[in-house]
Image (tube, rainbow, N blue to C red; front, side, top):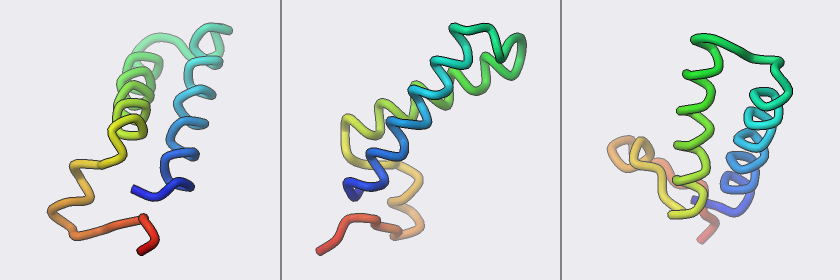
Length: 62
């Protein structure tokens, strides 16, 4: 996973967190987006996305 991909995932996760804690998203949307934010943060920290492997996609510059 490339640096830009990791940065964008982290930013999206932070924005979702801010929206949740300010009460802008609630209910089912909050749960779904919260799970997505956690997945984005974990994949950013690990540096690999499991969905990229079967497709053979890589955002890392070689």
